[in-house]
Image (cartoon, rainbow, N blue to C red; front, side, top):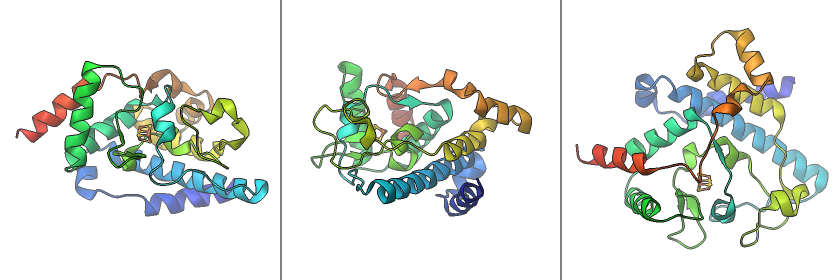
Length: 221
Ligand code: SF4
Protein backbone atom coordinates (compact mmCIF):
# COMPACT_ATOMS: atom_id res chain seq x y z
CA UNK A 1 0.00 0.00 0.00
CA UNK A 2 1.65 3.22 -1.20
CA UNK A 3 0.20 5.49 1.52
CA UNK A 4 1.43 3.10 4.24
CA UNK A 5 4.98 3.07 2.84
CA UNK A 6 4.93 6.88 2.70
CA UNK A 7 3.65 7.13 6.29
CA UNK A 8 6.33 4.64 7.45
CA UNK A 9 9.09 6.71 5.81
CA UNK A 10 7.73 9.90 7.38
CA UNK A 11 7.46 8.34 10.85
CA UNK A 12 11.03 6.98 10.54
CA UNK A 13 12.26 10.53 9.86
CA UNK A 14 10.33 11.96 12.80
CA UNK A 15 10.95 9.20 15.35
CA UNK A 16 12.42 9.69 18.81
CA UNK A 17 16.19 10.03 18.62
CA UNK A 18 18.94 9.31 21.15
CA UNK A 19 22.09 9.78 19.00
CA UNK A 20 24.71 8.85 21.62
CA UNK A 21 22.82 5.81 22.84
CA UNK A 22 22.02 4.72 19.29
CA UNK A 23 25.70 4.89 18.31
CA UNK A 24 26.54 2.59 21.24
CA UNK A 25 23.52 0.26 21.13
CA UNK A 26 23.11 -0.94 17.54
CA UNK A 27 19.67 -2.42 18.23
CA UNK A 28 18.17 0.81 19.55
CA UNK A 29 17.48 2.52 16.16
CA UNK A 30 15.63 -0.63 15.06
CA UNK A 31 13.37 -0.46 18.07
CA UNK A 32 12.72 3.27 17.85
CA UNK A 33 11.97 3.08 14.12
CA UNK A 34 9.64 0.12 14.62
CA UNK A 35 7.75 1.94 17.37
CA UNK A 36 7.39 5.05 15.20
CA UNK A 37 5.85 2.87 12.46
CA UNK A 38 3.46 1.28 14.95
CA UNK A 39 2.44 4.74 16.19
CA UNK A 40 1.83 5.94 12.62
CA UNK A 41 -0.30 2.85 12.04
CA UNK A 42 -2.34 3.49 15.17
CA UNK A 43 -2.89 7.11 14.15
CA UNK A 44 -4.03 5.97 10.70
CA UNK A 45 -6.36 3.28 12.07
CA UNK A 46 -7.86 5.57 14.73
CA UNK A 47 -8.56 8.23 12.07
CA UNK A 48 -10.24 5.66 9.82
CA UNK A 49 -12.30 4.26 12.69
CA UNK A 50 -13.48 7.67 13.91
CA UNK A 51 -14.44 8.68 10.39
CA UNK A 52 -16.30 5.53 9.41
CA UNK A 53 -17.86 4.58 12.76
CA UNK A 54 -18.31 8.13 14.06
CA UNK A 55 -17.07 7.13 17.50
CA UNK A 56 -14.34 8.89 19.47
CA UNK A 57 -11.26 7.35 21.00
CA UNK A 58 -11.86 6.84 24.73
CA UNK A 59 -8.18 6.36 25.68
CA UNK A 60 -6.58 9.46 27.10
CA UNK A 61 -3.62 10.57 29.19
CA UNK A 62 -3.92 9.47 32.81
CA UNK A 63 -6.19 6.49 32.13
CA UNK A 64 -4.36 3.28 32.94
CA UNK A 65 -7.40 1.05 33.32
CA UNK A 66 -6.25 -1.51 30.76
CA UNK A 67 -2.77 -1.61 32.34
CA UNK A 68 -4.36 -2.70 35.61
CA UNK A 69 -6.51 -5.37 34.02
CA UNK A 70 -4.72 -7.14 31.21
CA UNK A 71 -2.90 -10.30 32.17
CA UNK A 72 -1.71 -11.14 28.68
CA UNK A 73 0.58 -8.59 26.99
CA UNK A 74 3.12 -9.97 24.49
CA UNK A 75 6.65 -8.72 24.93
CA UNK A 76 9.45 -9.48 22.46
CA UNK A 77 13.16 -9.75 23.29
CA UNK A 78 14.05 -6.49 21.49
CA UNK A 79 11.31 -4.72 23.44
CA UNK A 80 12.69 -6.17 26.66
CA UNK A 81 16.13 -4.76 25.78
CA UNK A 82 14.48 -1.35 25.23
CA UNK A 83 12.78 -1.45 28.62
CA UNK A 84 16.02 -2.37 30.39
CA UNK A 85 17.88 0.44 28.63
CA UNK A 86 15.21 3.04 29.34
CA UNK A 87 14.68 2.13 33.00
CA UNK A 88 18.37 1.82 33.73
CA UNK A 89 19.85 4.70 31.77
CA UNK A 90 17.09 7.21 31.07
CA UNK A 91 14.51 7.12 33.84
CA UNK A 92 14.89 9.88 36.40
CA UNK A 93 13.55 10.50 39.88
CA UNK A 94 10.87 10.36 41.18
CA UNK A 95 9.66 7.85 38.58
CA UNK A 96 12.87 5.86 39.03
CA UNK A 97 12.47 5.48 42.80
CA UNK A 98 8.78 4.67 42.43
CA UNK A 99 9.52 1.95 39.88
CA UNK A 100 12.19 0.41 42.08
CA UNK A 101 9.66 0.31 44.93
CA UNK A 102 7.11 -1.44 42.72
CA UNK A 103 9.76 -3.91 41.51
CA UNK A 104 10.64 -4.71 45.13
CA UNK A 105 6.95 -5.17 45.97
CA UNK A 106 6.46 -7.37 42.89
CA UNK A 107 9.28 -9.63 44.08
CA UNK A 108 7.45 -10.06 47.42
CA UNK A 109 3.87 -10.52 46.23
CA UNK A 110 1.93 -11.12 43.05
CA UNK A 111 0.57 -7.94 41.44
CA UNK A 112 -2.53 -7.63 39.34
CA UNK A 113 -1.46 -4.50 37.49
CA UNK A 114 1.53 -3.96 35.23
CA UNK A 115 4.64 -3.09 37.21
CA UNK A 116 5.24 -0.07 34.94
CA UNK A 117 1.88 1.48 35.75
CA UNK A 118 2.52 4.49 37.96
CA UNK A 119 -0.72 5.08 39.83
CA UNK A 120 0.78 7.60 42.24
CA UNK A 121 -1.28 10.47 40.84
CA UNK A 122 -4.57 8.50 40.86
CA UNK A 123 -5.58 7.02 37.51
CA UNK A 124 -2.31 5.94 36.04
CA UNK A 125 0.49 6.64 33.65
CA UNK A 126 3.05 4.40 32.01
CA UNK A 127 6.53 5.11 33.35
CA UNK A 128 8.12 3.54 30.25
CA UNK A 129 5.83 5.35 27.82
CA UNK A 130 8.47 6.03 25.09
CA UNK A 131 9.39 2.32 24.97
CA UNK A 132 6.08 0.67 25.85
CA UNK A 133 5.57 -2.51 23.81
CA UNK A 134 3.76 -2.79 20.49
CA UNK A 135 0.80 -4.49 22.19
CA UNK A 136 0.29 -1.50 24.51
CA UNK A 137 0.59 0.99 21.66
CA UNK A 138 -1.98 -0.85 19.59
CA UNK A 139 -4.58 -1.35 22.32
CA UNK A 140 -7.06 1.49 21.83
CA UNK A 141 -10.71 1.65 22.86
CA UNK A 142 -13.54 3.76 21.45
CA UNK A 143 -16.74 5.08 22.99
CA UNK A 144 -16.21 4.78 26.73
CA UNK A 145 -13.10 3.92 28.77
CA UNK A 146 -12.62 0.38 30.10
CA UNK A 147 -14.66 -0.21 33.26
CA UNK A 148 -13.00 -1.56 36.42
CA UNK A 149 -11.70 -5.02 35.62
CA UNK A 150 -13.13 -4.88 32.10
CA UNK A 151 -11.20 -6.13 29.08
CA UNK A 152 -13.18 -4.67 26.17
CA UNK A 153 -11.54 -7.14 23.81
CA UNK A 154 -13.93 -9.69 25.30
CA UNK A 155 -16.85 -7.47 26.43
CA UNK A 156 -17.17 -5.19 23.35
CA UNK A 157 -14.76 -6.23 20.64
CA UNK A 158 -16.28 -3.72 18.22
CA UNK A 159 -14.97 -0.85 20.40
CA UNK A 160 -11.38 -2.11 20.24
CA UNK A 161 -9.11 -0.88 17.46
CA UNK A 162 -8.03 -3.41 14.86
CA UNK A 163 -4.49 -2.38 13.86
CA UNK A 164 -3.67 -2.04 10.15
CA UNK A 165 -1.67 -5.14 9.29
CA UNK A 166 0.74 -3.45 6.84
CA UNK A 167 2.15 -1.19 9.57
CA UNK A 168 2.60 -4.06 12.02
CA UNK A 169 4.35 -6.15 9.36
CA UNK A 170 6.61 -3.25 8.42
CA UNK A 171 7.54 -2.66 12.08
CA UNK A 172 8.43 -6.34 12.54
CA UNK A 173 10.47 -6.25 9.31
CA UNK A 174 12.50 -3.38 10.74
CA UNK A 175 13.15 -5.29 13.99
CA UNK A 176 14.29 -8.56 12.38
CA UNK A 177 18.06 -7.82 12.16
CA UNK A 178 18.09 -7.92 15.97
CA UNK A 179 17.09 -11.58 15.68
CA UNK A 180 19.82 -12.29 13.11
CA UNK A 181 17.47 -12.18 10.12
CA UNK A 182 18.95 -9.78 7.56
CA UNK A 183 18.38 -11.35 4.18
CA UNK A 184 15.36 -9.68 2.47
CA UNK A 185 13.73 -12.95 1.39
CA UNK A 186 14.08 -14.44 4.87
CA UNK A 187 12.71 -11.26 6.41
CA UNK A 188 9.61 -11.36 4.20
CA UNK A 189 9.07 -15.01 5.07
CA UNK A 190 9.61 -14.43 8.81
CA UNK A 191 6.94 -11.71 8.86
CA UNK A 192 4.51 -13.67 6.71
CA UNK A 193 4.85 -16.78 8.84
CA UNK A 194 4.90 -14.85 12.14
CA UNK A 195 8.19 -16.49 13.17
CA UNK A 196 8.82 -13.95 15.92
CA UNK A 197 5.65 -14.87 17.79
CA UNK A 198 7.41 -17.94 19.19
CA UNK A 199 9.80 -15.58 21.00
CA UNK A 200 7.08 -13.58 22.75
CA UNK A 201 7.09 -13.45 26.54
CA UNK A 202 4.27 -12.13 28.71
CA UNK A 203 4.89 -8.70 30.22
CA UNK A 204 2.67 -8.95 33.35
CA UNK A 205 3.99 -12.34 34.46
CA UNK A 206 7.61 -11.69 33.46
CA UNK A 207 10.14 -11.91 36.31
CA UNK A 208 11.37 -8.32 36.65
CA UNK A 209 13.68 -9.00 39.60
CA UNK A 210 16.75 -8.77 37.36
CA UNK A 211 15.72 -5.31 36.16
CA UNK A 212 15.78 -4.08 39.76
CA UNK A 213 19.29 -5.51 40.19
CA UNK A 214 20.53 -3.87 36.98
CA UNK A 215 19.05 -0.49 37.97
CA UNK A 216 20.63 -0.69 41.42
CA UNK A 217 23.98 -1.68 40.01
CA UNK A 218 23.83 1.31 37.62
CA UNK A 219 22.88 3.65 40.50
CA UNK A 220 25.78 2.48 42.64
CA UNK A 221 28.43 3.41 40.08
S1 SF4 B 1 3.89 -1.16 29.78
FE1 SF4 B 1 2.88 0.79 30.16
S2 SF4 B 1 1.20 0.89 28.66
FE2 SF4 B 1 1.87 -1.27 28.78
S3 SF4 B 1 0.53 -2.23 30.33
FE3 SF4 B 1 2.38 -1.50 31.40
S4 SF4 B 1 1.86 0.55 32.17
FE4 SF4 B 1 0.37 -0.01 30.57
